[in-house]
Amino acid sequence: MEDDEATQKMVDKALARANKAMESLEQVEEGEEESIQRELYKELLKALERMQGTLNRLLDLFESIFGN
Image 1: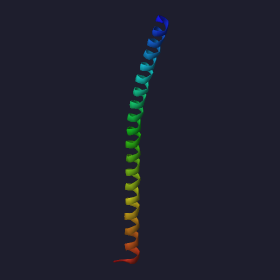
Image 2: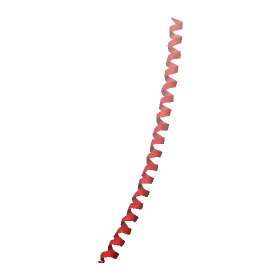
Image 3: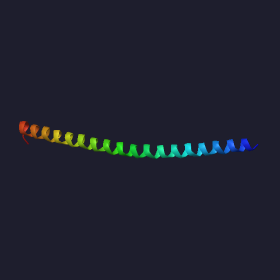
């Protein structure tokens, strides 16, 4: 009986440590995910700014060709 209880305690401790490790891993992954999303938003903003610049140049070209 004592061996069973000792074994169960060891298993419980191991499971508790595994759960803590998984929680820590999930927190790191969530933090990394937010960081990746921020980087993607920055890249998207840069792309939109370039598109806006291109559209402005096209509008200027259109106006120079066809006038007002």
